[in-house]
Amino acid sequence: MERYAGALEEAVDGARQQERHYQLLSALQSLVKELPSSFQQRLSYTTLSDLALALLDGTVFEIVQGLLEIQHLTEKSLYNQRLRLQNEHRVLRQALRQKHQEAQQACRPHNLPVLQAAQQRELEAVEHRIREEQRAMDQKIVLELDRKVADQQSTLEKAGVTGFYVTTNPQELTLQMNLLELIRKLQQRGCQAGGAAL
Image: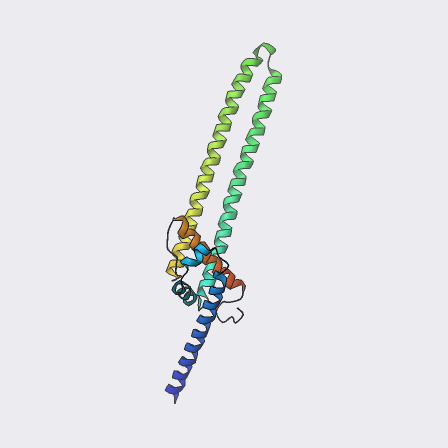
C-alpha cells in the first residue's frame, strides 16, 4: 500500500510540474510577443520550453534577483568612485585658479606676460592630466562592468538557463538581455515556484 501511495504522489507531483511548465511556457510565449520581431524569431518554442523548465523550481528567479542586486551595488560603487574623482578634479582646478590669482596679484606688471604664459602651460598640463585620469577611470568602469556581465553570463549558464554563455557578441548580448527581461517580467507577475498568478 505504501508503494502505491508513493507512486501516486510522484504522479501527482509530475502532473503539477507539467502544469507549472505549461503555465510558464504560456506566459513566456505571451511576453515574447512584446519583443521586436527580430528577437521573436530567435526565441523558438524549444528555447522557451527549455527556459520554462529552468524556471520551474524558482531557483533561477532567486539567482537573477541576486545578480541584479550585485549589479546595482557595483554600479553604485563605480558611480561613487567617478564622483570622487570629479570632486578631486574640481578642488584641484579651484586651488590652481586661486594660486594663479594670488601669483598675478603679487607679480610686477612687466613680468605679468611671462607669468601668464607659464600659468597657461601649467593649466594645460593639469587639464591634460585630468582628462587622462577621467579616461582611465572610465576604462576601469567599462572593464569592471564587462567583467560583471561575464560573471552573470557564467552564473546563468551554470544554472542551466538556456541562451546564456559568456559572449561579447552584441546580438547575443541583446538576446540575453531580452531573456533576462522575460524572467524579470515573470518574476513581477508572481510566477516564481508555486506561484499561480500568471
